[in-house]
Structure formats: C-alpha cells, structure tokens
Length: 111
Image (cartoon, rainbow, N blue to C red; front, side, top):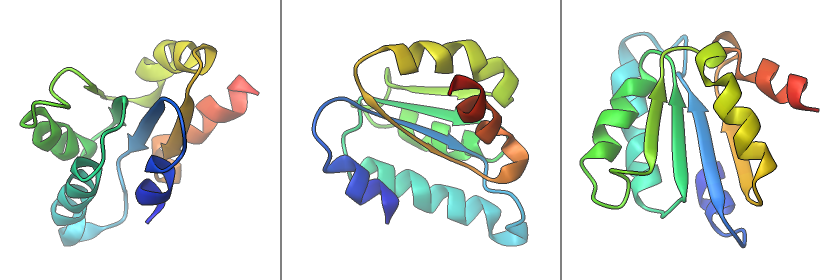
C-alpha cells in the first residue's frame, strides 16, 4: 500500500487524504481500513478532507500519537491556505483522494 512505502521515506512526512467516493455501502468500512493503515505508522501530520474522511479523523483522534496531529476539513477549498503552508515547510507531503474531492486542484495550483 502507498502509506507503507511513504512511511519509509526519510524526514518529516505529512498525509493529506480526501474522501474516497463511489464506494457505496463499503464506504465506511474502507475509510476505517485506511485509518488502521495510518495507525500502523507514525506520520508527523494527517489532514483529512470531506465527508467519510471524517471517519478516519474520528478513529485517529482515539490514538494518543495522532490526537494533536490529525485535522479535518469539510472541503478542499477550506484546506487551501493550510496546504500552501505545508508545502513551504521542509517535509514530504502525500496527497491522495478521489477526483471529486478536488484535492488535485490544490496540487495543480501549487506548481
């Protein structure tokens, strides 16, 4: 999985994950599965965007390591300013999300 490979990179690592759309009745379970994968690693920050990504946020908030390192935004446009600041810091940022979350726009606008 992408998260395991990402975790092996040196330095500070930030995960930005958007809601996974088009999963239907599997949605909640798949989002919780992602939360468990994140819990297997120790990332320096996790930023979650939109809808069912809130399930990941809730699960990570239960873990002492992530309690102060996980953040949730209702929409990508609300996250835009913070995303820009993340890119200014010396760290590696992984961005993953369905096309509909529009996280790709943040990446495109930052180039």
